[in-house]
Amino acid sequence: MKRFVCACGSPMFFENSYCLACDRPVGFDPGSLELLSLEISGGGRYRAVGGSPEQAFAHCRNRVEHDVCNWLVPAEAEQDYCVSCRLNAVIPALESGKNRLLWARLEAAKRRMIFDLLRLGLPLQQPDSAMLSFRFLEDQRHNPNVSESFVVTGHMGGSITINVAEADDSVRHAVREDMQERYRTLLGHFRHESAHFYFHPMVAGDDEALQEFRGLFGDEREDYDTAMERFYAIKDTRITWQGRYVSAYASSHPWEDWAETWAHYLHIRDTLETAVAWGVVPTPDTARDSDQWLDTWMDLSVILNELNRSMGTDDPYPFVLSQLVADKLSFVHRRVVPTPADAVASATH
Ligand SMILES: [Zn+2]
Ligand SMILES: [Zn+2]
Ligand SMILES: [Zn+2]
Image (cartoon, rainbow, N blue to C red; front, side, top):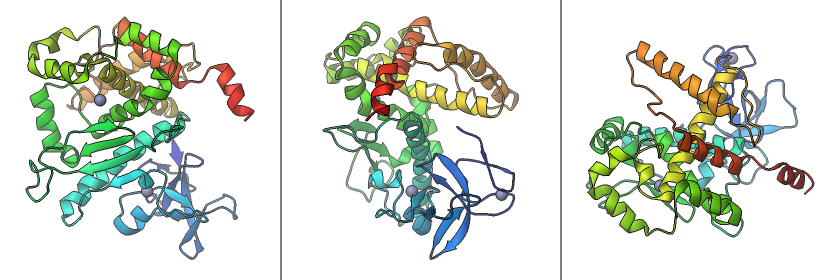
C-alpha cells in the first residue's frame, strides 16, 4: 500500500474517512489512486485541499447512507456508487447491527483487493465477459431466517460469492482450525477469488502461457469435482503439499493452485509496496523478467514474522517458498506485468 499524508502533514491510512489529527474529511480517489484531504465546495460536493478547484468529488453513496465506504466519485458522474461499491450484486440484509459490521469488514477487504487490481492496471471487465461482481450471502448455519442452507465462497463467470459469516472472526477462526489452514482472512478470500476471474484472459486464452502453466501447475482439464472430492476425502494428502504448492488447498486442482498462487502474489506485492513506502526495504526491481522482488520478499517475510512474534501474535506469513512455488509466482508476475511490446501497444491506442 502507498503511504498517504494529509494536507496537515499527518499520516493517513487507506481505510480512513477522517484525518485523525486535523479532523478533515478524507476520501480515496480511485482515479488517481490517492487518498485526498477534502474541503467542502458546496452542494454536498468536495474538492481536494491544494487540488484543482474544477475537480469536484462526492462521497460514495455507501458512505453517505451506511458509512461502510471511504471512496469518492467524480461529482459529475452519473453513478453515485464508487468503483468498488458499484460491483455489488447482493449485500447482506441490514436489519441487524451485526450484519452492518460484517458488511463493513467485507467492503474494507474488497476495496483493498480492488486497489490491487487498479494498481496493476487490470481491467474489472473482460472483453466478451461479465463484469466482476460480488454477492455477500448468509446461510442457515448462521442465520435460520434465510433460504440458503449452505453458501460456499467461490467464483462463477465473474461473480464472486462470499459467505457473510467469514467476516465474523470467531467463525472464520473456527473454520481455519477445522481445515488446518495456516492463513485465512477476508482479504485472502477476495484475492483468491479474483484469480479465477483472470485465469481465462491471462492464461487459458494464450496458447504459449497455457503450455507453460501446465508445466508448472498441472493440467487444468482434470475433472474439478473429482479432484475436490479427493482433496476433502483424504486428509492425509495435505501433508504432501509442501514444496510443490504454496498451500494445502493449492494441491486440490490446478485452478486452485493458480488462485492460491495469485493470492500470494497480491499479498506479496501489497506488503512489499508498504515496506518500501515506509522505508523498511529498498525498492526492488519489479521489471517483467526480474525476480529480485521475490528475494526482497523472502527477507522481509522473516522480519514480518519476527515482529509479530515480538508482539505475541501469529506469523502473518507462515509459509516457506520452495523453488517450484517461486517459479509459479514468477509466472503470475510475468502474466501481470505487460511485455514491452504490450506496453507500447497500449500507449499508442
Ligand atoms: Zn490532517
Ligand atoms: Zn463505495
Ligand atoms: Zn478457488
